[in-house]
Image (cartoon, rainbow, N blue to C red; front, side, top):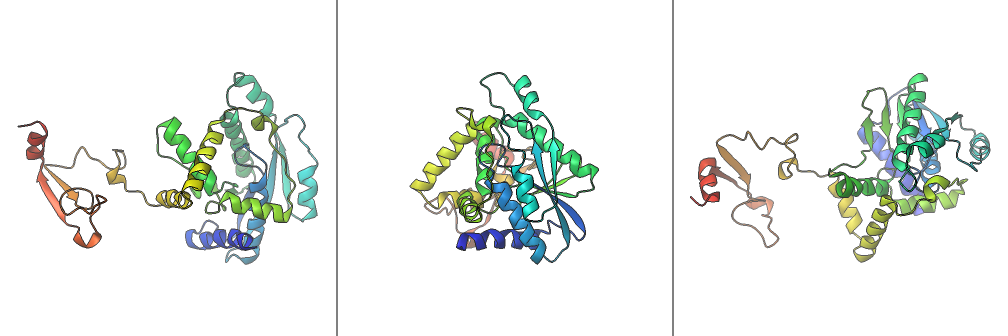
Length: 299
């Protein structure tokens, strides 16, 4: 019961703080899983949370549950419509044969998830734009976001995850992730408690050696070794210091001028044992650039 309370409280607080929803807007809740990698727990929980928010949030908005029938073999077409009708939720089923496209384009043995995800997202964006829906709610949770960060770090060479709120490249859609601050284990407990109908993705589930699965194994092992490590990494995603990375698009290191100004929390004297100076001992150190270059060159 405690995890159920957290799942409703966290998104409600974030809606109020970040103003993800505005008065009179329409919201599309995608009934789909975590990019096709597992059973559809997140979609059901996200929808349930949004229904709870609709009743309690300080803004009025409408919810339309959307499911994409991608024409995968064995897909039980009746399950979700029957469930959504039973709880009185307005819903739409989009039929788009992305399965055939994926099977035709992706070579045998290669991962299909990336293309499948893009096709599914495109269908949702198009539907939302045509129907005047201003927000698209996806079921990604905190573990998904952290896994995506490491996927991009290890395989994409970039520091990139998934934000709680994102404007699409064409500016037509806003994606929100109501479960962005909720852990997968809490979602699983809540879904079990609510007895949602589960529809597994047979296409993704049949693939071996998925990179995301390997990342998940790594994170699970880390959490067993150090239970607070996951929480620390999630906190790090909300505390970025661009000036201490190497991206010149975020921080222009090349035109700092004739002097380098460095914070002694990271450089210089009075460092603590861990290399960080306590805040009350922070001071600015100015080093002439030409002098620094001569030292580096052994002059």
